Length: 329
Ligand code: 13P
Ligand code: SF4
Image (cartoon, rainbow, N blue to C red; front, side, top):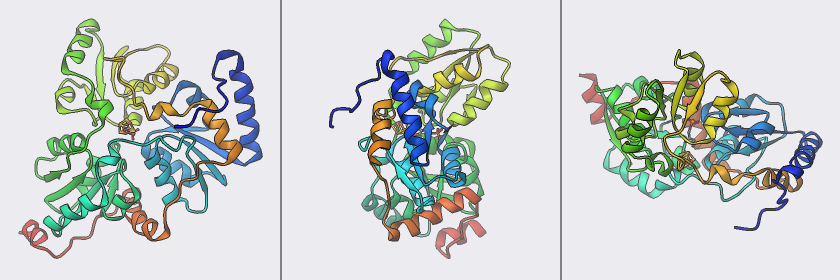
């Protein structure tokens, strides 16, 4: 990885850096969107903050030629699939998602061949090629709804085995075939850390992201996406909340709920990829119009179908297979 340009993230230079970003943003008619796990200073300067679903929708609505996507590669790629006429920039080209990299086209095709006619639901944390070979996409905020909407009993879910297992526990009537992918950030937290944190803050409510394994989810008072957690934190009577997801969330939660206290079960709850984007890289991105993320038209046309089905929550067509017939009976 090349050295970060504008190593000016030290406090005395922060305001200069921010001013330059804001001026360039206007000059280039760009908007800055950022995921809830991004660094505080990146969240502060972003025009739009959100979870994966909110950001996909927001990029479609904004009237801007350039979108600087402070997040990881699959997010910028999804934005590009949905908005081919917009220039989508990822400030750090190495910012990826290890979970998305756990499934590739070859693996998915093999699984589909072994399970003909079974619909594939892919978590948005996946490549354009995987989306192109899937029937419908989902994010953590609509995964349950999407899987429940399918008329099939048997469903393939890729790549997150934890989110898939969570859906399975909520939809016992389904038979979900899981891919063995996972988020290393959410897997890093031990059961003991949750127990210790709950003992330390006995009055606190515990909310967790469904990318967490079952060993953590079993303690949760609320399970949901990052936007779901924001709503829960705002509406719950609890004044103290243990946050079962990446540390970047705590910054936003505190900012939006000044009367409440938020605790992390571990100082290691960090997604290294989400933290790669700094103000220095953001400025570099706007100055040089890099790094553009795009998808070949052939893959884009296929991938957009699974994304549109998710956005419109359209039912997936039942293929005439043994499985489909089985469900009918
Ligand atoms: P959401 O913000 O959609 O809940 O996703 C979390 C995540 O891990 C993104 O990579
Ligand atoms: Fe991927 Fe996990 Fe980081 Fe989200 S938090 S980008 S799922 S590694």
